[in-house]
Image (tube, rainbow, N blue to C red; front, side, top):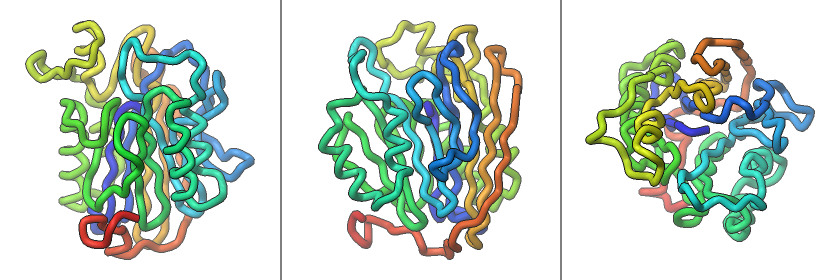
Length: 267
């Protein structure tokens, strides 16, 4: 993924809401989301075999973004898509995150977000060791969690407003992900790419011939355990090419389920 916002225990109906755009080169082949034989719902990167966002029927979820750092790419590094499948594999999530913290140098820059019902964590090899994400709205792109890039601020504001008014239509969330307006030059971050690319990459939804938003995904988990995962795929012109819409159930998540590290320590 390249733009993610999540609302933890911030909505009257939904215990969890995640909205995300995956930006990638159009030449890189991928399969849309489907149930893998391993037991999770995710798309598949056909180049390296991993995925960018997945969820299990018991509520475990994981997703990854790259860290934008031009000129600092190791061609022999492990695929970051394997971080997601590793997080989705059976076993305690905390144990897995501890292992990848110790092995982080084998990957190019990444942000891994992962969680089980009641806990969400952020791990990155370009920052501190993994930590719990507090209840509320958090967002990231290709930098550290809550780095205030223009599109991060935009998607955060959109999901905060949706949660505050108790919005029930996921089309509102897809509308926020579909924002194609670049940021004004005065607000652009300086990430080491040419100015024309900074402009292009500043929009939440990117359209260009060679690189752009390949899919938008929304995952919502209601407090009664009802879950819905919707993925919309797009071509290089930004036209919709397919939709995956899956519903399933996990354990209920009543208010107060999410661990707040400010008051209860990091989990």
